[in-house]
Image 1: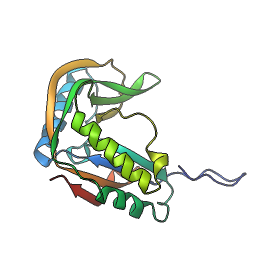
Image 2 (image 1 turned 45 degrees about the vertical axis):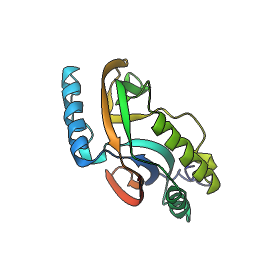
Image 3 (image 1 turned 90 degrees about the horizontal axis):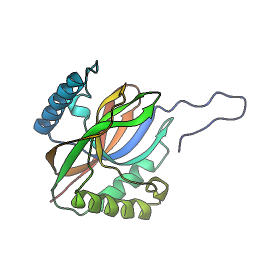
Length: 191
Protein backbone atom coordinates (compact mmCIF):
# COMPACT_ATOMS: atom_id res chain seq x y z
CA UNK A 1 0.00 0.00 0.00
CA UNK A 2 1.16 3.53 -0.60
CA UNK A 3 1.95 5.61 2.42
CA UNK A 4 -0.42 8.45 3.14
CA UNK A 5 0.08 11.59 5.17
CA UNK A 6 -1.44 13.31 8.17
CA UNK A 7 -4.57 15.44 7.68
CA UNK A 8 -3.64 18.88 6.44
CA UNK A 9 -0.37 17.68 4.90
CA UNK A 10 0.24 16.85 1.27
CA UNK A 11 0.10 13.18 0.33
CA UNK A 12 3.47 11.56 -0.04
CA UNK A 13 4.39 10.95 -3.67
CA UNK A 14 5.59 7.38 -4.28
CA UNK A 15 9.24 7.15 -5.31
CA UNK A 16 9.81 3.41 -5.18
CA UNK A 17 8.12 0.32 -6.61
CA UNK A 18 8.87 -3.32 -5.86
CA UNK A 19 7.79 -6.12 -8.18
CA UNK A 20 8.52 -9.68 -9.27
CA UNK A 21 8.84 -10.28 -12.99
CA UNK A 22 10.13 -12.40 -15.84
CA UNK A 23 12.41 -10.57 -18.28
CA UNK A 24 13.23 -11.81 -21.77
CA UNK A 25 16.92 -12.37 -22.44
CA UNK A 26 18.80 -9.63 -24.33
CA UNK A 27 18.19 -11.09 -27.81
CA UNK A 28 14.45 -11.58 -27.26
CA UNK A 29 14.12 -8.16 -25.64
CA UNK A 30 15.67 -6.52 -28.70
CA UNK A 31 13.22 -8.41 -30.93
CA UNK A 32 10.30 -7.27 -28.76
CA UNK A 33 11.43 -3.64 -29.00
CA UNK A 34 11.62 -3.90 -32.82
CA UNK A 35 8.26 -5.70 -32.89
CA UNK A 36 6.71 -2.92 -30.76
CA UNK A 37 8.12 -0.15 -32.99
CA UNK A 38 6.69 -1.89 -36.06
CA UNK A 39 3.23 -2.23 -34.51
CA UNK A 40 3.23 1.35 -33.21
CA UNK A 41 4.12 2.63 -36.70
CA UNK A 42 1.47 0.43 -38.33
CA UNK A 43 -1.15 2.03 -36.08
CA UNK A 44 0.31 5.53 -36.57
CA UNK A 45 1.09 5.86 -32.88
CA UNK A 46 3.85 8.39 -32.29
CA UNK A 47 6.67 7.88 -29.83
CA UNK A 48 9.03 5.14 -28.89
CA UNK A 49 8.34 1.71 -27.45
CA UNK A 50 9.55 0.68 -24.01
CA UNK A 51 13.34 0.16 -24.08
CA UNK A 52 14.41 -3.45 -24.57
CA UNK A 53 16.10 -3.61 -21.15
CA UNK A 54 12.84 -2.65 -19.40
CA UNK A 55 10.49 -5.07 -21.19
CA UNK A 56 9.09 -7.65 -18.77
CA UNK A 57 6.08 -9.63 -17.63
CA UNK A 58 5.05 -8.67 -14.09
CA UNK A 59 4.13 -11.58 -11.86
CA UNK A 60 3.39 -9.61 -8.68
CA UNK A 61 3.33 -5.86 -8.01
CA UNK A 62 4.45 -5.50 -4.40
CA UNK A 63 3.49 -1.85 -4.08
CA UNK A 64 4.48 1.77 -4.66
CA UNK A 65 6.02 3.57 -1.70
CA UNK A 66 7.82 6.70 -0.55
CA UNK A 67 10.92 4.75 0.43
CA UNK A 68 10.63 0.98 0.64
CA UNK A 69 9.17 -0.24 3.96
CA UNK A 70 11.72 -1.90 6.26
CA UNK A 71 11.86 -5.65 5.70
CA UNK A 72 9.74 -5.75 2.55
CA UNK A 73 12.62 -6.44 0.19
CA UNK A 74 13.98 -9.19 2.45
CA UNK A 75 10.52 -10.82 2.75
CA UNK A 76 10.04 -10.78 -1.02
CA UNK A 77 13.57 -12.10 -1.67
CA UNK A 78 12.96 -14.91 0.83
CA UNK A 79 9.71 -15.87 -0.92
CA UNK A 80 11.47 -15.82 -4.28
CA UNK A 81 14.30 -18.02 -2.99
CA UNK A 82 11.78 -20.81 -2.26
CA UNK A 83 10.58 -20.98 -5.86
CA UNK A 84 11.15 -24.32 -7.59
CA UNK A 85 10.48 -24.34 -11.32
CA UNK A 86 11.98 -25.47 -14.59
CA UNK A 87 12.47 -23.16 -17.58
CA UNK A 88 9.39 -22.85 -19.78
CA UNK A 89 8.06 -20.78 -22.65
CA UNK A 90 5.64 -17.86 -22.52
CA UNK A 91 3.24 -17.23 -25.39
CA UNK A 92 1.50 -14.00 -26.34
CA UNK A 93 -1.32 -14.23 -28.89
CA UNK A 94 -3.00 -10.78 -28.74
CA UNK A 95 -2.01 -7.15 -29.07
CA UNK A 96 -4.03 -4.13 -27.93
CA UNK A 97 -4.60 -1.66 -25.07
CA UNK A 98 -4.97 -1.99 -21.30
CA UNK A 99 -5.83 0.68 -18.75
CA UNK A 100 -8.00 2.79 -21.01
CA UNK A 101 -7.89 6.32 -19.54
CA UNK A 102 -9.71 8.95 -21.55
CA UNK A 103 -9.12 7.17 -24.85
CA UNK A 104 -5.51 6.30 -24.01
CA UNK A 105 -3.93 3.21 -22.53
CA UNK A 106 -0.88 1.01 -22.38
CA UNK A 107 -0.16 -0.85 -25.63
CA UNK A 108 0.53 -4.47 -24.68
CA UNK A 109 1.11 -8.00 -25.82
CA UNK A 110 -1.23 -10.34 -23.96
CA UNK A 111 -1.91 -14.02 -23.61
CA UNK A 112 -5.43 -15.25 -24.13
CA UNK A 113 -4.63 -18.96 -24.25
CA UNK A 114 -2.10 -21.39 -22.84
CA UNK A 115 0.75 -20.51 -20.51
CA UNK A 116 -0.04 -23.30 -18.06
CA UNK A 117 3.56 -23.38 -16.76
CA UNK A 118 3.51 -19.60 -16.25
CA UNK A 119 0.24 -19.81 -14.34
CA UNK A 120 1.61 -22.66 -12.19
CA UNK A 121 4.71 -20.56 -11.42
CA UNK A 122 2.44 -17.63 -10.49
CA UNK A 123 0.39 -19.83 -8.13
CA UNK A 124 3.53 -21.26 -6.49
CA UNK A 125 5.04 -17.80 -6.03
CA UNK A 126 1.75 -16.61 -4.49
CA UNK A 127 2.00 -19.42 -1.93
CA UNK A 128 5.56 -18.36 -1.03
CA UNK A 129 4.54 -14.69 -0.79
CA UNK A 130 1.62 -15.67 1.45
CA UNK A 131 3.98 -17.68 3.68
CA UNK A 132 6.23 -14.60 3.91
CA UNK A 133 3.28 -12.50 5.21
CA UNK A 134 2.90 -10.69 1.86
CA UNK A 135 -0.58 -12.04 1.10
CA UNK A 136 -1.96 -8.51 0.57
CA UNK A 137 -0.05 -8.54 -2.74
CA UNK A 138 -1.38 -11.88 -4.02
CA UNK A 139 -5.05 -10.95 -4.35
CA UNK A 140 -6.67 -10.21 -7.69
CA UNK A 141 -6.47 -11.78 -11.09
CA UNK A 142 -3.38 -12.48 -13.18
CA UNK A 143 -3.44 -11.41 -16.83
CA UNK A 144 -0.08 -12.22 -18.42
CA UNK A 145 1.06 -9.28 -20.55
CA UNK A 146 4.07 -7.22 -21.60
CA UNK A 147 3.72 -3.44 -21.95
CA UNK A 148 5.21 -2.30 -25.26
CA UNK A 149 4.39 1.44 -24.95
CA UNK A 150 2.70 3.69 -22.39
CA UNK A 151 -0.15 6.17 -22.79
CA UNK A 152 -1.02 5.57 -26.44
CA UNK A 153 -4.38 5.94 -28.20
CA UNK A 154 -6.45 2.95 -27.10
CA UNK A 155 -6.92 0.19 -29.66
CA UNK A 156 -8.98 -3.00 -29.30
CA UNK A 157 -7.24 -6.32 -28.82
CA UNK A 158 -6.53 -8.28 -31.98
CA UNK A 159 -5.26 -11.84 -32.33
CA UNK A 160 -1.71 -12.16 -33.66
CA UNK A 161 0.52 -15.01 -34.72
CA UNK A 162 1.77 -16.34 -31.37
CA UNK A 163 4.98 -14.79 -30.06
CA UNK A 164 6.85 -17.36 -27.98
CA UNK A 165 9.85 -16.69 -25.73
CA UNK A 166 11.78 -18.65 -23.09
CA UNK A 167 11.61 -17.86 -19.37
CA UNK A 168 14.70 -18.81 -17.36
CA UNK A 169 14.49 -16.76 -14.17
CA UNK A 170 12.25 -14.64 -11.95
CA UNK A 171 13.65 -11.30 -10.79
CA UNK A 172 12.81 -9.03 -7.84
CA UNK A 173 13.07 -5.42 -9.04
CA UNK A 174 13.23 -2.15 -7.12
CA UNK A 175 12.09 0.53 -9.57
CA UNK A 176 12.85 4.19 -8.94
CA UNK A 177 9.63 5.78 -10.15
CA UNK A 178 9.94 8.47 -12.79
CA UNK A 179 13.63 7.74 -13.31
CA UNK A 180 13.30 4.66 -15.56
CA UNK A 181 15.85 2.97 -13.32
CA UNK A 182 15.34 -0.66 -12.30
CA UNK A 183 17.58 -2.19 -9.66
CA UNK A 184 17.86 -5.96 -9.68
CA UNK A 185 17.52 -6.95 -6.00
CA UNK A 186 17.31 -10.76 -6.22
CA UNK A 187 16.72 -13.45 -8.79
CA UNK A 188 15.90 -17.13 -8.98
CA UNK A 189 17.06 -19.19 -11.92
CA UNK A 190 14.74 -21.92 -13.10
CA UNK A 191 16.56 -25.21 -13.52
